Length: 425
Image 1 (cartoon, rainbow, N blue to C red):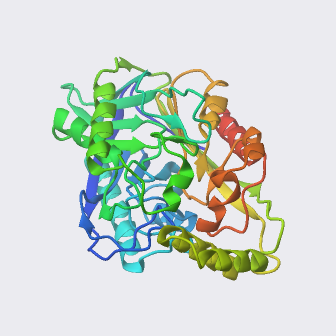
Image 2 (cartoon, rainbow, N blue to C red):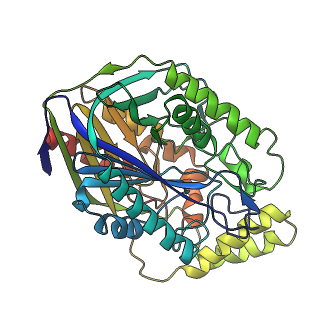
């Protein structure tokens, strides 16, 4: 853990954005059934950096980032690596940039993203000036749905933090709302940040010159109202349009702007900690990958095009398996304290209950997000494994992982986060 001191209630804050417009023909991630490349860019891929004292949180408009990529980025910045967190916004309308996962990667584009992270961070650090922090949250946004259990009502809050200079000018926003950025369906072939891009635009127009970062929370089981397997086909995604993404994004922004904000400050300290823990994987398949591949090949003969593409992706997963594969993964967990506002960065796609397990154990405002410093797949809570489903049984194939994470993995992440938060205090 490391700590830096600033004046009571005042931090040095800077933020910056770098835009990237991947060329038409770029492979897209987010749907195994979508194999056709992008046809253009609706809104540019953005890399956003928020530098607070000697820490920095970075967001990238992609479905996921490999942990090795995140390590490269952090070690190439003018900050201590453990004081950097890198979150993928998890848009399903982004490019393929994960080596070995989610459809592979475009090497040139990945290098451009790595460079953009450095450029954005350096610009954010260079622009730092004294700022104060305000925080608030509100419920009743009424967008998020539990896609595994539609009968269960959920109402996660939209959380917002702003950093303002001495004149009251907002320099930067952090908005967290746990709802999959997957409004745009598999038929979409335009690069986009999905609904968070519209949310950010509204906030930045409201406060000219400001930079807004969006964190997707722990949204592994939460989206705007369709089952996960609706993405297995290339049709039937009525309502999952750019216009709907705009409406949802602007609605979330309106909720943010309507949220009362209050100043928060405790010790006048900025601190950060990171830990890497081991989490196990456990196969749930009754037969070997080779036998599964034969079954999928037989099914593909009469399958519709979308399903056939999915089966082909799964067959490739089976071909990539080898005896004696490592059945554990090194999971990075980060915690920052910005003068009383705690941020927790978890890897992969944890379920919403993970946030509740963390926030129920601590006092004060806490932002908990997944998709940070690496994205290897889903982390369901232990009580969800009995229900099966895509996140438990199938998603690891598209992620290129040997097997799903074992029951108890999410709880291990929670325990690590709580211990780190205790260190920061």
